[in-house]
Image (tube, rainbow, N blue to C red; front, top):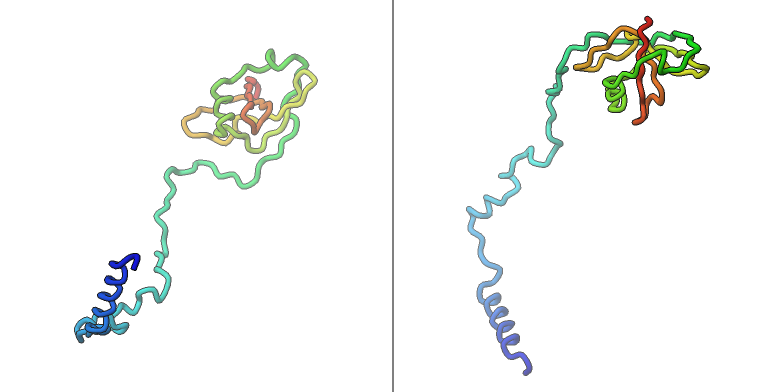
Length: 154
């Protein structure tokens, strides 16, 4: 015998099972595990969801646009963009973050090039940003290189 304790432990285990049998179950424990005692709704249907959601509007929207106004040519100038309009640093940063967007608007021709543009009333009002009157001129709009210039003309 190579492993005497293995055979001994197997013999002891078999003897314990023969003497004890399957074991007796008391009526109290049998009643506790009975399927009749479990909750009837337990895992019988999906959890109930409330009819309402807790989402509410956090701020009141002052302007709701349904259709954008389709404007055409807003301005024509023969000089370069730097002379016609001034660079707007705050609007450029907001445009690059996606917080300063035009809604509708039109286009301008400055120095032989065509740019997308919008009047101040055609700009979606971002929070904590004051829109000055004038024409906002966008170059590379919708990208992280978006630049915004503002001309004083309305």
